Image (cartoon, rainbow, N blue to C red; front, side, top):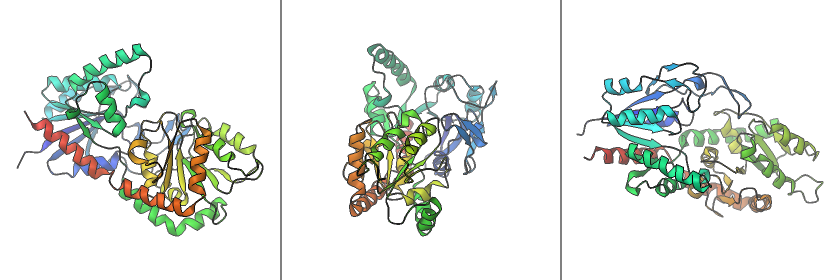
Length: 399
């Protein structure tokens, strides 16, 4: 029997999507996991500027895995390239006799320092990040600088954990060899979202009554930050065009979940229609979301920049159709055109409207698309994450 691999995981702060995966890894035989956080700010209520509201997650972010918040000089209540100014990881890696350092995100000075110290200490280094060609620099000079950046990163990283197809292609485009890239898909706790959505079925009509939604009318859902880059306004304009005459409200409802600096703009545009079919529900926490996923017929993520889009994973576990722009990173992996939804060109309101009309106009097709979503997401889970992580660790064991 091979000895357990002592795995150190470095990440900026406790993240709600990662918590159940870390708990799962901690129970795996052969892996001895310790998580090091640069900050613990997300463990309490905090102001999220992009949500424009106070956020306090309603699920436990720690527990079930060994962890420590690293010491730091100066403020510890936010994350940036320099902050928090952490220290002490190298000594902890030595004392813990770790074999591998797994780093999530490479755009912080401390993460680079950690990788360098780990390499000098004889540890193997795994890297995971969200970057794709969507985020790649367009200017030739920036491309050259990025190539130099990846040359340095490639000398530090022994393995790269790809969150999806676009992420893997991105690594390869900057010279990372294919045999150093391991699939570790961006997944959510499928069991949680699937079970919670099923439990919400019995309360669906009650929720419709609370929200003032007439029985039988379809629901289009947006569930993300109300920011300019997420382009909720594009969805709103596409919805307005669904009116049969520009005056009468469309048959479907349009429900916005989320907060952000674009909420006022969206509400003013919606208010100009004088329709009661557009609802703004504000921020909803993790345990609240599944009931709205069950309520909707289709969820739309029209972002002009979105490295992944985990809300798509979540709603697919409720068996719902999805529509994403071609700038949403999960599209190539999770959205099969015409099968479980559509991918449309970002910013193309007409194309978005066509996709919406195609799904909403045929209830049977909408249900089939939802069932296909559920089939797809079953194979995009923590099980695949663990398989990818184990493949990477097994490769690092080899001399």
